[in-house]
Length: 373
Length: 169
Image (tube, rainbow over all chains, first blue to last red; front, side):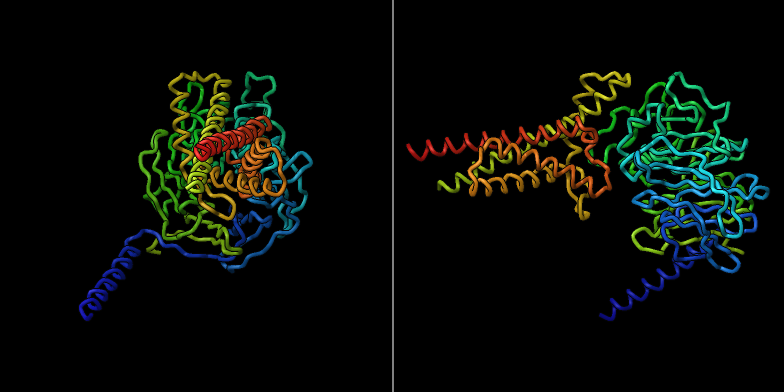
């Protein structure tokens, strides 16, 4: 008995030493800035350093990192908060400092079914004013799943919107007369840019930028303006794609995944005229957001792509060279939660949102900063 | 001895008919997907078709989560639902002597529809058996359940006849 106790003590001491050395070896440290968000979905940074956080349940909040306070923004449009639907992306206009405009994506209920909507409004002292609907997706469904709902401003101030396939309407991703499974491009006022891709199909909607997508919850661009999108696969087949206008990304005609019930969706993985992902994950990791890192705070991460994942809950650091993923590192597993969003803040810290699904008000804002500061 | 034979006869009739129903449900799902791919200009060779059918027969063994978070595979789900449907019909037929062929056929139809309904409830209107997303697919799906029920009844009647013959001789 004494021997067992002795060995157990030695094991515990070695384990503690090992974990403390491990934490010290890390170049980063994690700090929970706030706990108590209700299913947070996205985060953006205001010029004064405050964080703008959307919650799927329909609330928009402002977090002040110096005071550690959370303020609820009033007059947010009413959203359909059900299953995967709710208030999703929040994006500042590139000229926010001049026009105070923010853009919101969210699901709504209409007579024809529920769908994705994008509105813009001015943020004035914690209140939204001059709210204007700039896009309602022609993707009406009964399901409250697969909205996509990610927003991205391009260098020319046009806005990309990812619109998911609604789960039950996957075949419509290959048809151009609807917004299921598409990436759309509109002007910042909702009008359609004159240089959008032209498709051969007469019925093609003019705001379609790319098609053949499933549920794209990640949209970002690198320093050169190359657009990246990732999408949830079914059972396996999560994809990272480079987005170019007018192209077909293949869902559900080609896929690396299978249906949830174990049957095939398509036996094909490639077809001429359909784009291949630059990386795919089988089994799925449930990609949720992504950001490119361009700061000297972590110089070794410069130019890397950070992708957050819900299952099992970690972040993937990808090194991409000439459009090829050359390495992947699994990071921040110690957070031990579903990671809903990741963004690179202006001062070089990474900011992570965990969604605390299943437990009300358990979502967190976590800061990743250098260990030596 | 007769009761044991009766029990095994009924069990055999149930297993055969449930296997047939499951296989047809999975095949319908595969053919539905393959047919759509054909409309998209894919070259579907005989090998692709057979390979897909066998893939889905194996795929039916993989686990899905249904109502109340219960992990189950397609075969078990179909077997359990049909078992409940046929048992309930047998009890009802003890009380009300309704036509056997029609009542078991109807039980098969309702059971298969139940599978769709309950998995849909779990996943918030998401249909897990993709061919049942459209009305035509759902109709064929229920038709398979109906004929599965009729097949069960015919097998059952056949085994009972054999048993009766054995008993009389």
